[in-house]
Image 1 (cartoon, rainbow, N blue to C red):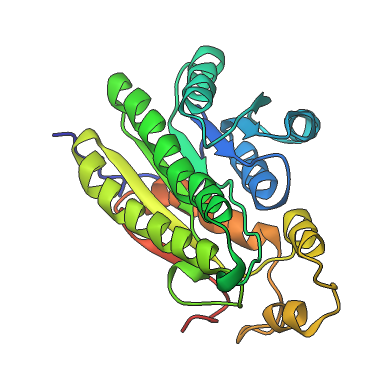
Image 2 (cartoon, helix red, strand yellow; image 1 turned 120 degrees about the vertical axis):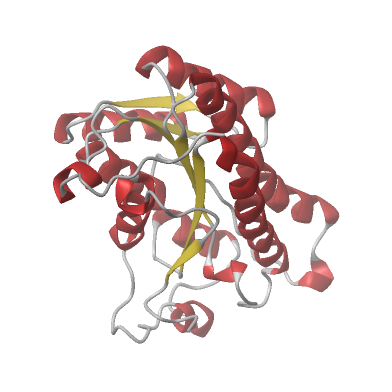
Length: 272
């Protein structure tokens, strides 16, 4: 059984640094994924931005590579396809030399009332938000355990993994509760390999993806439904992607070396 190292003697700069580490961020082309990738690159990690929209990922990787300390590369990834996930993991090993950090960020959230929701829609949401988390974690853990150096898996959950939310999101809420449960279980199963598994649960943060999903559902951006979830929480403002990215960076770094199985709320106190 591998034990996580005692990092008490390291400086704060050493604890937050990801220099020499190799990361994969799913859904890394835009929104929360891009913000997460940007912080990981800034901290020194080499990062693979894996996204189904590979052209957007290429653009993001090029921009981040110019600004960060680590390298940034893009790859096509369909998180619902086991072969695609394995190929992305193999690409990270081939290009970077291994995988130390894997962030399961990709997610979808179509808004359909439960009475009108088809089985296909339900299954599609779970395929991305739950199956995708499992596949990513499994492929990451396989490569981490083979290398024998441990690692960190961070699953982007949601406050919807703790409670119900807006009407029309039954599949999303169910899938995010599943992602939170997967996080807890895999933390137990992967601990003997020195692999930590953590969740980060953001509140609603305006991103390109959120706005596009609202538009696709025919919800006006100035509607009460949208404005109700965008009201400032107890801390007095609406979140931005970097608010979530910093929490993911904490989880991925040695600052959180003694943590596994938890899902950290990044919600300005909304769920308290």
